[in-house]
Image (tube, rainbow, N blue to C red):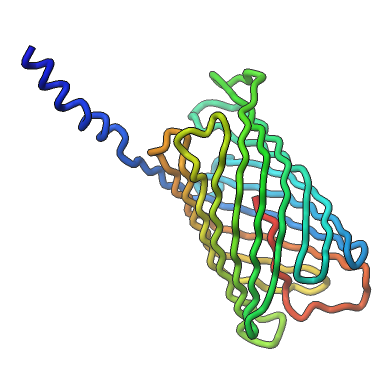
Length: 254
C-alpha cells in the first residue's frame, strides 16, 4: 500500500517529465518561384511553386503549388484569394507515401513607406484539408483546420541604385483552430533576415536565413527549422515601359 501512495505522489511529476518540451532541430533548404501578372490597374493573377528539402537538400519535405486571383485597390492595398495544393513528405523513416493537403486562402496586404524604408503588413486566412495517413497508407479521411497568419516585412535600401541589394527582415505568426487542433493552437513562428535584389525585366530575388518554430500536435514537441531560403519573383505589368525603381515587396510564401 505504501508503494501505491508513493506512486500517487510521484505520478504528477512523472507526467510533467513526459510533457517537457522536446525540440527537433533540422537544416532545410527552401526554393520557390513566385509570379504576379497584373492584367489591368486593378486585376491580376498570382501563381507560385515551392520546394522544401530536409537535411540541407538530402530529403523531401514538401512540394507546393498555389494560384489565385487578385484585386488591387491601389498600389498599396491588395486582396487575393485562391487555391493551393501541398504534397507533404512522410516524417517516419522508411515511409514513402506523401500526404495531400488542399487549401483555400484569402489575404489582405498593405504596403507603405517610412522615409526610404518599405513596410508590408499581410493578413492571411487559410482553410486546410490534410490527408490522414496510417501505416504509410491513405485512410481516405482528412483533418480540417483554419489557420490565421500575420506577417510584417521590412525592406531597407542601401543605395539609390536598384541593382544594389536591400536588407530585408520579416516576422510571421500563425495560429490554427479546428476539431483536431487540441494542443497546438499556436502553429508557427517564422523569422527571416537576408537580402532582396532586382535582376531587371520584372525579376527579383531574396536570399537569406529563416528560422521556423513549429508546434506539433502533442503540444510539447517542436520542430526548429534552420532554413536557407532562396525565393525568385517575377512581376508582369500590362503597362509597358514602366520600370520599377526597386524590387517590389513580395508576399507569396507557403
